[in-house]
Length: 376
View 1: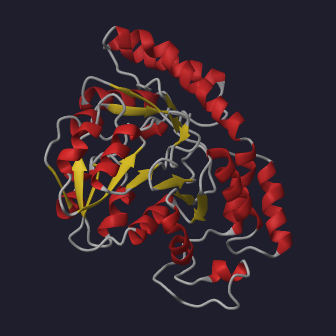
View 2: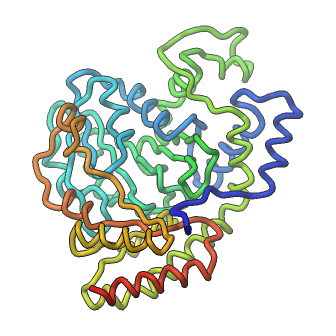
View 3: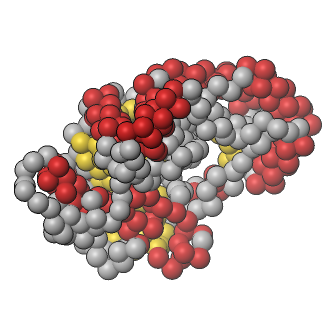
């Protein structure tokens, strides 16, 4: 079976994890936490990067930092993972779901302004498949209405919009280093803070509501409880596993891009014939090959394709069921227009994509896809 995903494995991980064991400094905010944060701050030109236990945790921190209260509204796409919504619903907010663009599967920036009310407290954009939302338009709306922007860049590490790293454009950026992502620490994430007014409180919230970070920097002689917070700080074991991948970030990225290009270049003729649709990457976006998707005529054809691939020992999967169509989405949100979200989500399927995907595996999958198309 060719799996849909394989977590990144590098021999250097053993060295770094062993280093943590020998140091006896296994809790958070140690050597590797600092190394990973510093690497991302330098590479992405980010003001501050705080490692977290997950991208979900990073999103939950933004909800606290924005002081989300019951009755507030938060704009976001319905086509996203539930964490995007849960972070704000936990504090009583209502999700205002906005339709997507069918070409990128990102939020339709032209519909955001109409969704704004006096209750709107944040705009959350999701960079689907590591392809940026239209951030220039979105940031202009943010400035016009003085509404903060949160980038759910769970899939966007090493991707960019007009030469700016995803996650560094809005007020906050949230990264994921889950097992399924391009760079992984098993479970983990990061919060990128681009608006300095939130920095001091973010450190406090991440440290269970204490000012311990100031204490460790020698800025105060003891630390104490000063605000709400939680345990958002990851173990050194997790971040040490990630660090070696960051040192090889370009190699991993380039390898994935080559696999993505193989799919695209060899399947483009079928898109030209109107049989399938392939991903669109705007010229001003640099993607990271987080995934390769294609779209079939309808949900039935997609199901037939997934089953055929499974018979040939290839794991292909569809993605999100739109949040607004779920029980939770109906209870905690609303959506006024669904022109594309449901229809496009039912046609989309994701092909295997991971670091070190072998050429013979790619060629085998291409052959099976071609067989299926010839049977239509």
